[in-house]
Image 1 (cartoon, rainbow, N blue to C red):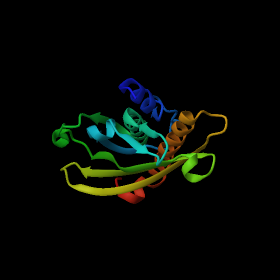
Image 2: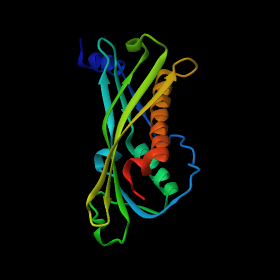
Image 3: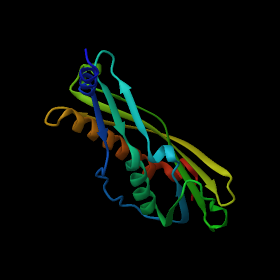
Length: 186
């Protein structure tokens, strides 16, 4: 077997799903009167989950910039004054009420031949750390999100992409409904 044949076989045994511009509805909520900045770690902006399904193909979900887009849209709607700062920036002299730093602790997914259903499912465990204006951590909140999409009517990549977007939207809903109660940010 030639190297070209091996590469062609391997290329046919994988699927790469990227979330470029997921559809995230505008949150309709009352803003909290706070000045907040978000700092997205590099691993958050470039998060890729890769999994080899036993005996089947390799799947990759690139959540990448979709994470920052989701949380930027969400926090911009939640707070009266919101800004994103660079990963290495020090917010100490910015006169803010809080710094929020989201991350992803873990993610996983299942495809139909694993679950013996026609569904693709995605789980994402986010973590939101909140720091006060002096840099003291005031909250460390894990958020578990889930999305499921049926393969019927969509291609396999599109169904997995939709399940990932639904998991992100699930996380956004949890943040909207529970953030103040879970973190005491206000």
